[in-house]
Amino acid sequence: MVVEFPKYQYPLTYRSYDPVMLSSPWQAPSDSASDLTDVLAAITSDPMRPLTPADKAYLWTSRDALTSTPAALMPFLLSVDWSNRAQVTEAYAFLYRWSAPTLPSSQALQLLSRKFPDPFVRAYAVRCLDSLPDYRLRLYLLQLVQALKYEPHHDSALMRFLFVRAVKSPSEVGYALFWLLQAELHLPLLLSTQYLCHCSTYRLELYQSVYVMRLLEAIARQVKLQPSKAASEAMLRDRLANAIVPQWFQLPLHPTVFYTSFVPAQCRVMDSAKKPLFLCLVPMKPQQPLPAPSNSICHNTIFKCGDDLRQDQLTLQLLRVMDDLWKSAGLDLKVSAYAC
Image (cartoon, rainbow, N blue to C red; front, side, top):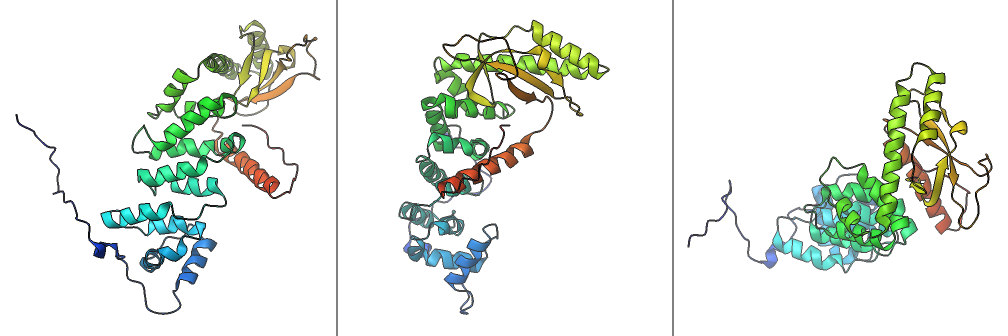
């Protein structure tokens, strides 16, 4: 039997454990101006500032004193020489000795960036997110889906975490996660397929929403081809009046609200380059007969086709996150950000 091992361009070496290797590869200056207090103050005031070799030396040599400072964890991990097995082992030990962050979502998102490809560090970040309730986790789903792009493997701690939380809370987490993953279909992310396979009867609601969104997309494309606004609105109302929709369906904006039909007479084409559709929908009221459609019971929404709404999403997400932080501090400013 012949065993053939992979061949690499450069020779591979396996370093033996040596306590000397725990010393920092960076040399800190001896002057008193660049002490640990100054380094921490500079990092706190400007988290985006790149670390100098002197900063890394101070952070590594002072790691025992920094464990009580949650904000110093990310700079400490940036000071680790990840090619040094001894330092990596030491960093793993210190990771769980560090004080818990006051804002776990903020620290977790930092550790899930592409600066930290190490699976152990990313698993620690996911552990920080585990304490978030569903409504607060949903605030950061946009960034967590983007963080999936930096995972070295499909089967990762972040992927399992999102999958479990989506299955446990399909209406609060699962629905939003599904549509965020739909926007990333050009990437080989398997989470969407796995979720559809295991979300049980909730799969029907997702399929109905996808059907309605494709129907609206087809109508919007036909509306754009019309020569005048009058022709566009006539096309819109005719297509909505003859459209076959499910008995009840949801829109990606409000997963907890079910609709039964459109009100074509109150739908119109808005004055804009992309010709967005102003839609009027009748919500479903359980155990109550629906009266004739009127403005008092209809819900209005705007549907855009072919427009990039990523900047809008980030702006509205910032408003919702700040509103959540203010309410946590006992300050309700009555912020009402519309869904996008």
